Amino acid sequence: MRAMADHSNREFSWVQGLAFGMAAAGVQVASEVIHQWGAYFYSPSQGTGRTIYVAVSAVGTIFFVGMLFDAVTDPLVGMWSDRTSTRPGWCRIVPIAGRRRPFMFWGSILMAITGIAFWYPPVQRLSQVNFFYGVTVMCLHWLFFTTCMVPLNSLGPEIARSRESRVKLGSCYSAGMMLGLTFTAILPGIMIDALDPARHIDPPAYSDLGYQRTAIIFAIFALLLIQVPTWVLRERYQPNQVETRMPPLGQLVAALKNRVFLMWIAAMVCFNIGFLAVQKILPYWAEVGLGGDETTVALLMGPFVGQKTERSWNRP
Image (cartoon, rainbow, N blue to C red; front, side):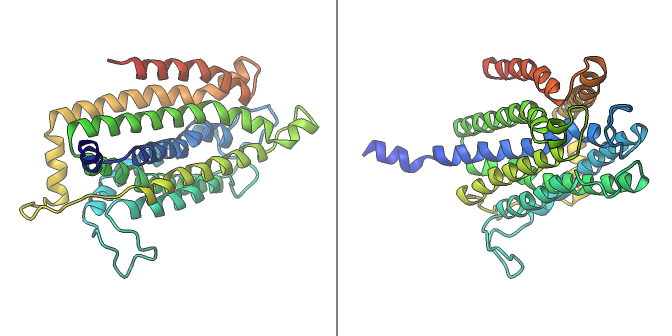
């Protein structure tokens, strides 16, 4: 009887914990492929026979504008999700209940589309059209990424309400993030080389097919990873009748007065600047400095990811 009571009182099952980790892996997969290879695809090294779509002086702007747009839309999507009704209304084409899961459902579909479209620049040469295309698709991709990521993070405390349950759910989330990072740091470089037919016919030649086919596979993989928890997880939000809603500007001011939040923001900025800078420059260094290709990047990333994973699991 006691075992049955403990089972019925659990805040989430192991299946739901697994689904939550799958969603975390999905958003990681959807972001890291573009982070790792997007700049190099649009502006590869000169003299290598690859198509240059955007000047190297401008390709960084594509990612900067996209990240800035992402930072602006994060709180907006969060407030929109907070104010969404838990019951499907007439405007929900797919009647998914809850405040968070509808965002994850549609966001993952749209993110898969932009995750593929990014690798198909309209002009097959250096052109400003490719620059504006890249900026537009990048902004849309990070908007849809936010539509998945922010509701997913908000869903965690609503599924797991006790401290013990949140620790367990956080472990599922961390495991999913690390697995997603491992896959996207190592596999794409190998797949890009293997899925490019031009390299097997004429080894010095290159084509876009390796990147495009890899992007399609990972976009579909991320879509499936996020769609599964959309149908498996169940929201447990209970509105508080005495809850007061603060206007958006008031929420922003309150956040800026939170010392812990500001320290976290500063730490994340420093981490992302350092990590993303190395991530963006690595393909260039592997080719020009080491005389390698995309597979070389995978070999270089392997030990780094392994060390990072080991430290994460062994952290007290």
